[in-house]
Length: 253
Image 1 (cartoon, rainbow, N blue to C red):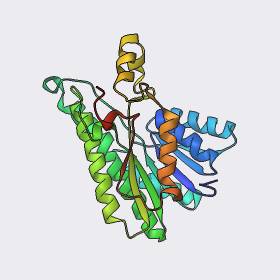
Image 2 (cartoon, rainbow, N blue to C red):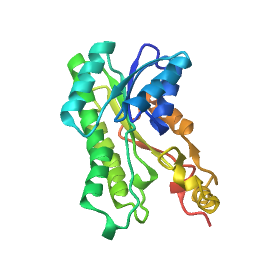
Image 3 (tube, rainbow, N blue to C red):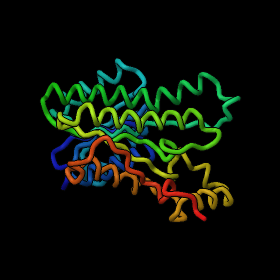
């Protein structure tokens, strides 16, 4: 098991890709700290992990609050005795023309999708440095971290920022034994994207933008995250791995 006796912290672990990551990491021997702004969803993930024979604990966490983030990582380290991997999975999206996008909505997406990633990475790295130990961070970017789409200004900007931050952190901590990477999922069926699949025409459109002519499943993204967090990726840092069914490879003719 690749993560035997390791402690993995997951933000946004109550649903979607974060939830699948909890199942996959626990299945590979990790103890998982599942955090979410909604404690009940985090607990639901933990209950399922334990039902499958794994070890996990639930935490309420607003990743946009610096004091809460600091306390969370201190508490997690004290409870488990160590920290090894951070998966920054918490995220939200907006769909709105720029001319109708409110400052409040813009700020909320930026706060959750990039400020939260920064705060959690910063706190996690500080704990690793204090313990003088290596570790790994995997951030959730997106295909819209390297491309763009109309009516998604805040989301696109935030995910480009995640890609940039991942590069910077990879450079800054490359000699510290702390690897920082990201994944860029294509359209993945989760609660965040479920609306796309309620209309047959929209579902076909979603499929057609991927070279593989299908959407992704959360488990597929989670397994790519496990790869980047594992020693199998020991010479990879500062990179965004596109897990997008060929979306960003080019345009289908």
